Image 1: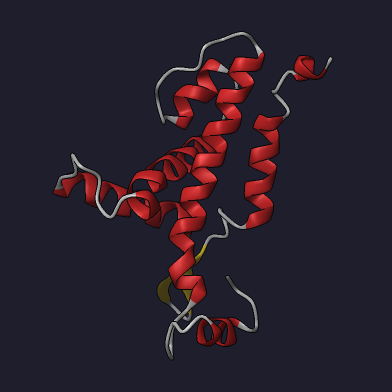
Image 2 (image 1 turned 180 degrees about the vertical axis):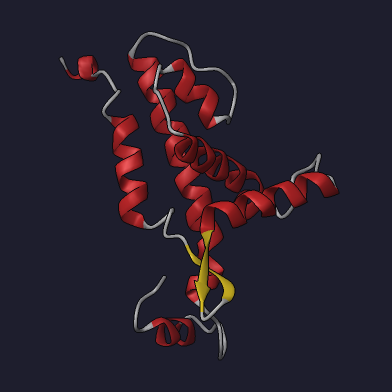
Length: 152
């Protein structure tokens, strides 16, 4: 998404001048992160002979797995969960309303940006909270809960 050849890839795909893979793919990346976390958490439950609930709530699944989480991790899991619904899978969820949309954008802003002051002015900058390295560490935390007894 952030490759130096972004413009060439867009041109080769016929996406037109000015198309940005980093802008177009960011929401899909977050959606896939959320779906992957849900699958690995449910797989860990199944490996413990527990039937996974029919929920997409990553924090509820983490509770069932007995995982202690910081406030920041709970917020990040909520963001990934909401990204499945808002940022990739559906243009707008079926039961959406204005408050839900505002809440998602507020959550997104809180997760994806952080305040920055420069020369007495206030700005926001990317937080890096969903960068690959951080996501990979989070995913591995839950993947390690999988009981590998099935291979025995």
